[in-house]
Length: 303
Image (cartoon, rainbow, N blue to C red; front, top):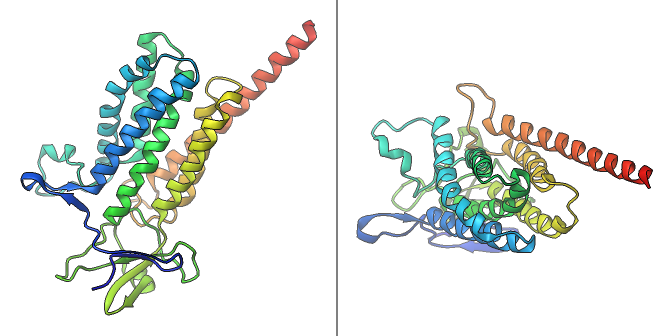
């Protein structure tokens, strides 16, 4: 019996990786859902407790925000995903809430979270940009952890990875009973190029795009936490996030085999949103730094 997932160039083999963690009372609980929950807990701690304390803010404000933003952002991410994927013929209304096995669009999460934060700040009469600068590290670390749910689901991977690619990933394609194990779509062309037979077991050798995204976001998470004390103006950290993640996602989306498309076009939704976020973030950073420098010059002239 072959391994389920192999990283041949770094010597990692993972056996018996069932997407379902356990099934209490016959209800399948997927590893994806567990990683999402762990990501939420970590996100709340870093964005709602750790960062506010570091900046001298009241964590209770962020706890109040979390009560609203977490469930609504998840729902927004689910609706976003469903808007760009076919609705199963046998699915009822409650299919919207069936996220145990996956189906959450991160851009839907981000957009919903921004809207909820804006309304919250308006009602509380507090700085929206400062709140976003504080809470953004929570979103990032939650995203990092959640991406490993894509790993256990065998989805969100990229195209063919050559034998020399450092992180080439071999995914077992069929179970012993013939059931397909890979969730993301695989074209005939990709299968022909990426197919490998190892010990009479079929694999496809692809790029672990989810890992690339998680690794870059983890670096961004560390950087923003360290840079926070050097922040020049409110909104700088959230703008940095949009620039970094926008560029990262825009590039990685070219590699994805399961990109969400706009209608029947070949245009990925993430390309539009990522480009918009990156350009908007760059514009805001330029505006912010120009404004800060102007104030410094005016202060210097007065002296």
